[in-house]
Length: 173
Figure 1 (spheres, rainbow, N blue to C red):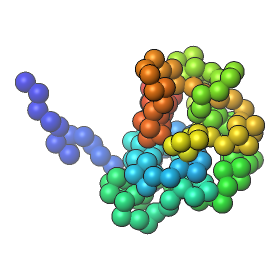
Figure 2 (cartoon, rainbow, N blue to C red):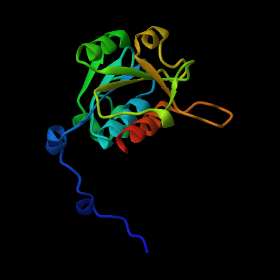
Figure 3 (cartoon, rainbow, N blue to C red):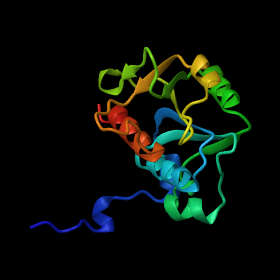
Figure 4 (cartoon, one colour):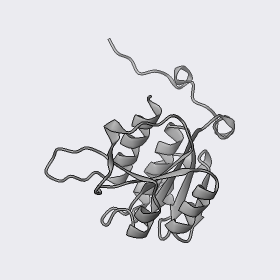
């Protein structure tokens, strides 16, 4: 028989404990993402995987907004975030801080996610717009491109799903 774990059994950290806990050296960069629900989901996913920071770029919506908070379920309070006027600016800030930049995109010469090797070095992952993907100028600045293998007819995933898949694959190892 299966019974859900209680909140006490889950060992959830308080907001203050989460802010103080060690993080994976990963920055998630959102490149002109339109949906507030995707932004809220990004906050929640970054919290779940203890990601260092979330960069919201261009016209990507920022907190406070009820639609972001509705999906984030409090993660806007536990995840360090910053807004940048452009994704290029965010990528440059990450590079200057010693992060290796990987865009998550379907591109020639990409590395399939299942073949990607990460050894806990500083990494920034760029996730692109829901329709157009990662901006070309950002791809040029990337040190590499990670592609999620897919076998269906659509060959695309929602950005929040892509983020969960990539982050899980990185941190599980």
